[in-house]
Image 1 (tube, rainbow, N blue to C red):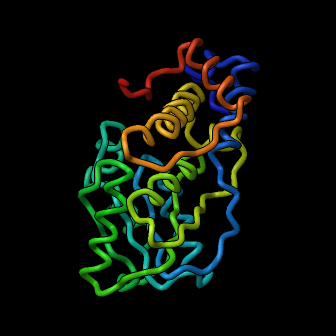
Image 2 (cartoon, rainbow, N blue to C red):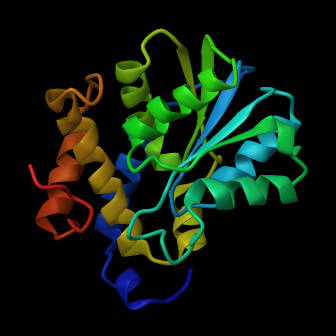
Amino acid sequence: MTDTGSERNVSGRQRELAGVIWEYHRMGHRVRACDVAIGLGSHDLGVATFAAELYRAGLFPTLVFSGANSPTTAARFPRGEAVHYRERALELGVPSEAILVEPRAGNTGQNITLSRDVLAVAGIVPTSVLLVSKPYMERRSYATARKVWPEVEVVCASESMHFDDYVKSVGDEKLVVDMLVGDLQRVIDYPKLGFAIEQDVPEAVRAAYEALIRDGFTSRLVAS
């Protein structure tokens, strides 16, 4: 593991609590063939890599990459998340004609609704959608999709990684814990705002969340 100052700020107990939340965020869906896939833009280029792997496995004929930029991706992906994702997929052998780009979305709801619009323009009206995301974004993307696109069947997929391996890939353990906490806040709060469907949050997960907030893992929280 890369030895950064932010990583030294995470204790063994905090790491255990983060692991509880990490496992909760993963939906555990059986990945299967769907009409289309949507790769949800983020800082993680592994989403595009995994989406390309699933395409090569024959799980869908059409892949939409969705995403503009956030403050955390503007420098990494100056042409926009979706554009860089597409370039990565092309490098990995996905044909250009199989990829659609949605370059405007600034949040998960827009990722899904604007991708639906791009598909409609292309004459594609799916009944099943494979959502490809970061591992800890599965539950939030599922809850969002079920709210804004209830008529399709949603299957979630992400790279099969343990928490420690994901931290190594990012290189900043505190940032990863902050992001886990931030996504869980959205899972809890967004249904009340009409952005997502309700998800059951087990007591152990909620307790881990509250403990990490008390410990200051709050940089990815949104004002409520």
